[in-house]
Length: 132
Ligand code: SF4
Ligand code: SF4
Image (cartoon, rainbow, N blue to C red; front, side):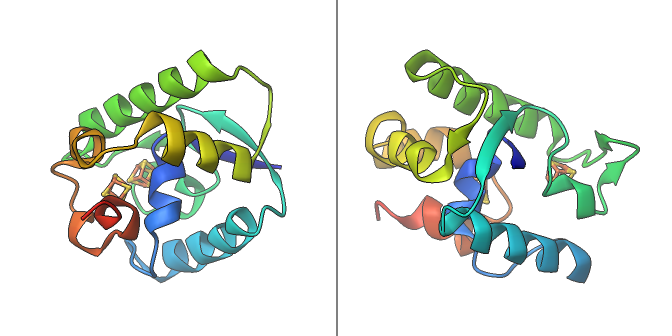
């Protein structure tokens, strides 16, 4: 089972190989493959997850990305609240989460801008660009 924090459910869908360093990108690539192919169930979280585990900003299970930390926590909260309002489970199929996110929770360009506006990866993120 994969442990994935709320906003990473969006980032994973927009991933095209960019990241903080080689180790991060390799790990993200592996998780991306598993999740996009629906190979593992997903437990959602608002803390350090399987992607953060290989991130240089993860210091003893705390994200120290100072520029973005407040924004990251806010994004996690928005995504998790929306998901849990629709479907509360201990774990989900990835495809079920993506369907919910893309077809019910974030359906317009405005929805996407509201959550992703200001993200440093916005210009290279396929998920953020999907409604353009
Ligand atoms: S724009 Fe940033 S926060 Fe939004 S999905 Fe893409 S990488 Fe994640
Ligand atoms: S920047 Fe923070 S939230 Fe993002 S992957 Fe790294 S540790 Fe996780």
